[in-house]
Length: 181
Length: 181
Image (cartoon, rainbow over all chains, first blue to last red; front, top):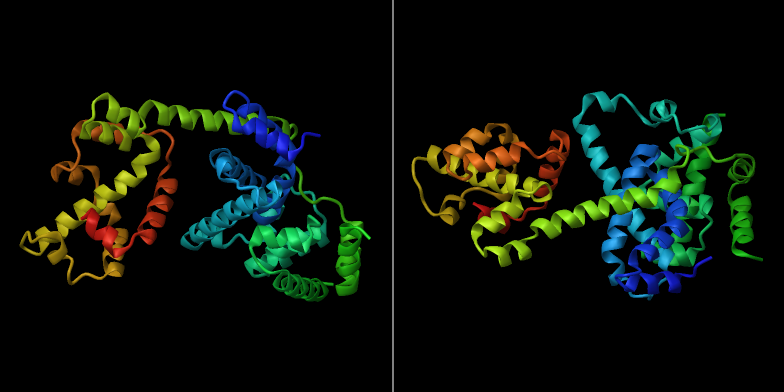
């Protein structure tokens, strides 16, 4: 597999930048897509966000200072794009009475690209109830199995605070799930 | 012990229920077939389209070509800039309308002296439907030719434009509002 250094070297030269960008996408698109998808839930939304994310990456790759790992830098952009998207969507749904009647359960039922069972649907609903930071930390630790150090780089938060967030998130989700059993 | 083992052990300690769900559940989401194969092309197509637009009509190139206000106006009337221009025009017309209804034409800073930032934003936001293109034409802020270009914008839906304008209004400071008026 191509290393990050090789990809960055290709991206630096105009004549190889497209090849470098394709390699970067091939290497990271799935991880970033699933990270975004767990945050926004619907495929169409995730598709919009990941495209915005990679356009931003393409335009700002020269600002990557190599102080962090490339993928934590990419995660940071993906996370910011997803949060911005969710905030806009929330504003839209607050303004629209029709969408207020929806809710995540209905949204998942209507999503043709959701194959989850009852428990997975409940887990996503529990996640939807969490504060933003706890949800992000839970997703990155539980689903994506990132180290606290990497999550710390993505969210710019201390490891201690992340451990507390994860602990609280797990406990809240457990309570939510047990209430439905 | 590697990071993944640590994460599993931590989860088992925090919540055996969630640990069990994680072990037993598969991936609840899926994507359309071949989605990831086509994603790099989709993103690169979008980047090329946007770059082509900027290259054809970016302000620097236009300024070199004829160096006048007309060049900036052409650039501003391209789809990506049009929403911003529309807001500026709406604010300008809103300001003119305010002055007219107050029976005088003082300088902008004086006229705004009694209007708070919140009131100004609220006014424009609440009366946005009042500022039609006809009114802008009447106020000589745009020409008939400009209007036909605005009406031909193919890529911005009304909903997108509304959200974009709301975001812009929220982000404007009082100084920026005064400057626009």
